Length: 321
Image (tube, rainbow, N blue to C red; front, side, top):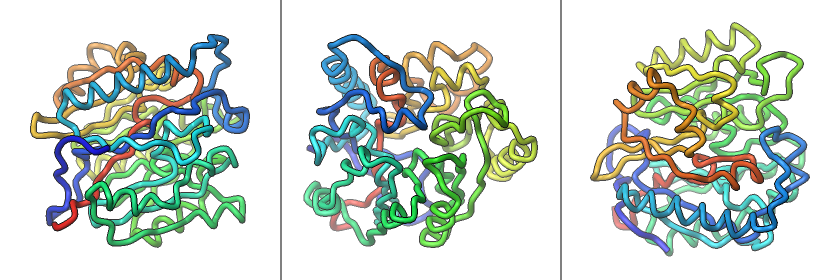
């Protein structure tokens, strides 16, 4: 089901903020021991109503997107028992030149989310796909790259920031940059900011890039050279850098997403992330879009991901353009 405007398909620089997103219903949502091994953000939740609560939170996000005028395409999971299907941005990404990329997933439970009919489905929904790139064969070599969880993209400059982890391999990053003609900025980020700490499972928990800003947890980067490289590249791009703390990262403040509709620019984030903002951070961030907090506490706790993880940006042009 597709609703709302779709602005992509125009000539010119690649847009940074999408006007439409793709979501997958949390039909089989629940705990996943396989992903918990590399995701320190997942928690044990004893509430037997977690699936119903997740469905309510999902519907609340849909309502928020509708109020903002953001176009939505809502899909049912190809495997209705997949516990993490509500996070579709990890197994595919779309690009304004009509490209769809499929990604190698770290755990078997998440490979079940990948839908071989995705391209046909998107075309049936009215979008044009000119090229499909499938990187999933990297799974056979135990090398992974989990979509725009692993890659935080500066789309206008085609720069991919990547926090290396069990889910984000150098080989996968190199291959993506090869097929997409991109430039890479790899770094290490850990949950406590020390070399001994567990790597943060996805880059989009550490940072987010918008049209004129970047939210980054430099405290999570134990190597000073990584902090310097990331900051220098963002400064070259002319991005306002908004640093966040480790505590704010754990409250998903790095896991936000700027979107744009005819109504203006919006920054989607969870209520937990919104409440973690200080007044001195909130004011400059609001200069880049209206903040739209959405409560997703169950999805954050059980799934270990937040609002940005639930949104696969749809940059594909419309059929006929």
